[in-house]
Image (cartoon, rainbow, N blue to C red; front, side, top):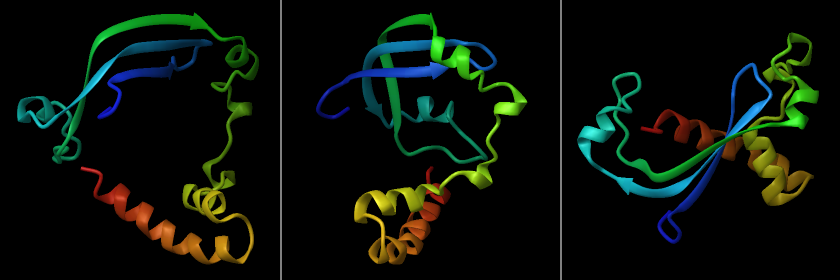
Length: 118
């Protein structure tokens, strides 16, 4: 955002085979009135992203239509997914001993970051 304010977001519409594209410009803000609108669990973020000059489009997605992720039989339990910290560690260090050793450290960093997101 600091180098290029143009952004594109891709959002799934829950329970449907449509996706929404949002194209626009983003700026960072510390405006307290705007940040008050984003309070979660009585915690206000320190920094916000404001989108403007947005264009929206909604399209049907054949891939989503075929996958039907909203159906219960297509649900994947989070327990079966690779932890983010493990995937990041494998990506950064490759598989093997180094990746296994760094995973606990990255896991602690990610948990800390998630706890102090706002």
